[in-house]
Image (cartoon, rainbow, N blue to C red; front, side):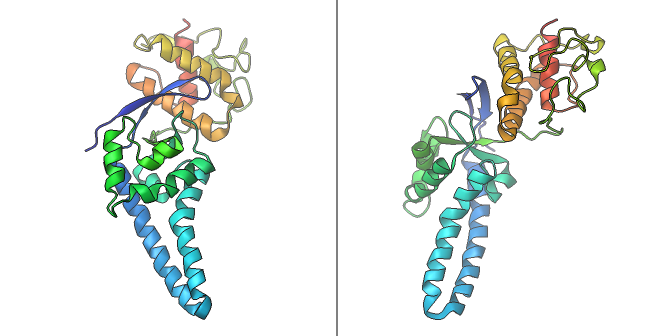
Length: 262
């Protein structure tokens, strides 16, 4: 069982988000899965290198370099901060401000893994994670990254929806209907379904964050937009009663914003 350390990050879009930091247990599990995959790949490379005669050593060195450093760096850069092991365990690398990890950040944190691995048992990395308030190993500190738990949503994330556009939610819900201006944060008129929703526990700061996200979302890339919507929705979800999740996190946030204007 892991302690659920939480961190509030100031997002690049001006949104303060609570994230759950990944602890040593989930990170070790993810690393073990990746190490198993890398070991299998290195064994395969060694067999293949043996077929190249005198050039086999160069083939082996190049292949091992790509597996040990290239794989985690490319995976974290191209697949939303997740290697195969991290994806299985539901964790991901992000920048300390909550934005997606960059190639340079991924490269730095994986190069410095050599330090974390000392003295061959990842003792340095484990001690750093326990000592850091952000559960960062030395590589994370050098790269300004953290490892967080990804929210597991049971609903579809609406990424391409713009209020008032075709294919969006039913206008009867109060969004996309008459008087709704694309790009604004909330519908001006509440629909009857809002009646009975209890959103009194949602703080003014959270409402402000929701409205800021709804206003800025169309300027975000699809991945960042989906992650922000998930994080905000599932931060607020335990505080509300009666607000349905059908339509995805973004539509849920629209409903929250609309309910708090009534």
